[in-house]
Image (cartoon, rainbow, N blue to C red; front, side):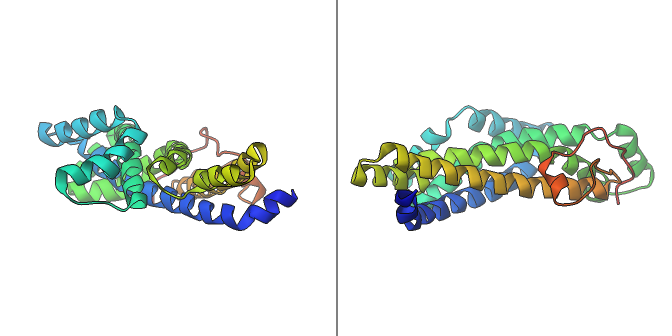
Length: 242
């Protein structure tokens, strides 16, 4: 314990970089997922084809290989060198965004067609029915899977040290090399990764409960702090989206 306390400032520096990678990568992944997920639901073949190409290409490329390409191949091709941290964020965002796009597409397609037809009968524009009716319901369906993707992205940041990013894993490696304490060095990293994951899980459950309440779903077990320790039920009553 004394060893971990002594090395805590270094661990916290690495954890801050890991959090930056997670937040930046998640933000980019979310934007890409929404854009290409919505394109994948369009009636015209061209936007659907664009979305399909993006999803199939970047789901099939390992995040680590994409990081290496961004950090080392892109400068040779374009003459433009990305910062190592930014390269990792872009690679993680593009990779996870491809998975997220399928989540968005499936959630939108799961909205009852009768409700969509009703918005057409009410002469709503595509933008109005998507913003007011479709997305609020699809959003509640997306969130549990989005939460899993955010956790997976956070764990994938552990390979960013291979392109020179001084994240939590890199700090653990440095401490191990300097002290020879393999078990303690990686135990400290393990604990911090776990704590970061728990904060992310807690935040995603807050978002899930808020989305369910807006749809008239009452989660069992109350809405207090302790209720957030349990995942929301999927069998709750659905009301009309506000």
